[in-house]
Length: 331
Image 1: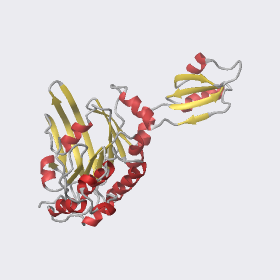
Image 2: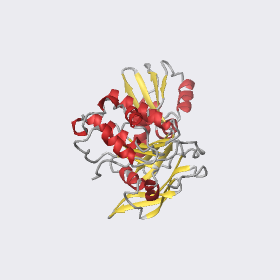
Image 3: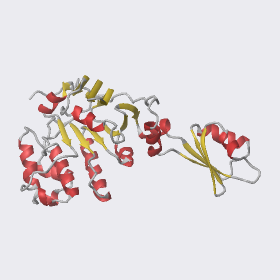
Image 4: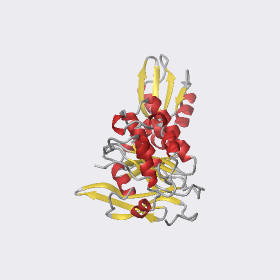
């Protein structure tokens, strides 16, 4: 098998990628570069283009325009060469085989798979190794999908809503396993609806809306770019009224409640300085925007320019690249 070289510094590159389904443009001119060793979250509302982007990445769909390259190859070539492992949402598990048998079978199709015990341990399934796949709970099936995706030692791991069926404890264990695999120098791209998961587990967050990338950066960069800061002060009789608060620099909205003014501000520093000049900073509280605030702001403004992405990382030393064949039939 031909291997990638140290000069292949990018794991993923989308160049002007478009994909249409009839009159619907699912992906509209996407430009995206992921460096080796990065962990990247893909966020977007339902219908934003996430699933189509992942299908293009895995070679399950072909772009109408533009190009998708994985480690310098086409998506189809990269998958066939054993560089990609995927854990998709849809599909039915193979019945009447045990977890160990399934992982061992998938791993046997690759020259240098992960040891079965290691793949099971990473997925948190060591104790369920001898149970049949069709006897597992929904959360355990998700972890079995993860174990199979890891079986071939992939260089790029793609996870589509990987924690959708997991409880809080299982989700925490899953992300610990994912980070352990990423720490080996592998690239991970995952989509999720849980914003706190993206914030806590990704080096970068890419936000899709209407088939376009509207933001690409760290959680902190997105919060600064897309969400206002909450500035709160105690009100006083004869002090500033709603109109006066609303006229302060940076203020985008005002709520007066229970003796406090809660101000949304696009420039918290300017707002606080103006409050100080007016002697109105009693009980001052300044709370940064949450990632949810930023996400809602970014996806509600289709013409807002995208947040600048950080430069791709350089080469990372990784194990010999292998893949895991998806063990389920994708609908």
